[in-house]
Length: 329
Ligand code: DAH
Image (cartoon, rainbow, N blue to C red; front, side):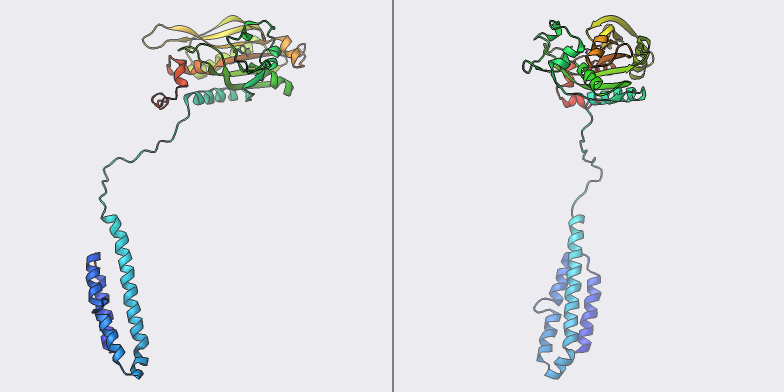
């Protein structure tokens, strides 16, 4: 009996080592483990043995049975697992599936770039609310009560006291109320105008406000700083000019234009910002002594700078969320 047990164990091991697929394994199962298989037959024989021999061989028979069953099971799972992969046809020449992760909106990219340039010029970045009181949006900025900018045409009034800010200049006031000079900051953000939507204007756009307050700040410094910005942002040879202008909160005031040459169209000057020396009345409104301090300010249109830089000729495309436009940047 013991010889038989050894024969079956060795025979099974030799055969299962040669098994290559599930079909061969099934044949082996029939041969050894089915009802009429070698193992079952041996177990039947074992049952017929006298009691003393049963005692002697019981453990050996059990061990053989379990060993064969375990070995069979592990080969089976191995074949099933590898089979599920090798059976499948994989075309290695197919291009991979592209994951579309979003990109930064072109306006965000432009704002990041503007912030980076001003940071190096020594400006910190500050923010203020989009919902403003009439005081911050107009009054503190020296707008006379009958100034045309307060007109219903330009301003989205929320109620009698509050408006959607029409520019980022009110953040200047908030900053000067909070901090003592020297102050040197830019204030980017969204602004709102109640204007007819066209290729040139939209009801919402972005501005970057700038403010520098200290003793002995000059207009020449303002010009030099803005020229340095334009050269860094648009390129060293970009034509620019300053024109005199008027804003209630600056005196003197100017506007800066840069030359825009859209391909295939006639070139023209394009206004990108307003600027000037902070009006002494504004300094008084925030409790800064105009006899000691002076300062300059500027407000830049972000969409315009992006349009000029990337050759976009319709402001509305920034807000359409059309992927065909957005993916280009
Ligand atoms: N707030 C002005 C506008 O929206 C732009 C502006 C002009 C801002 C002159 C300034 C400035 O800070 O000094 O049209």
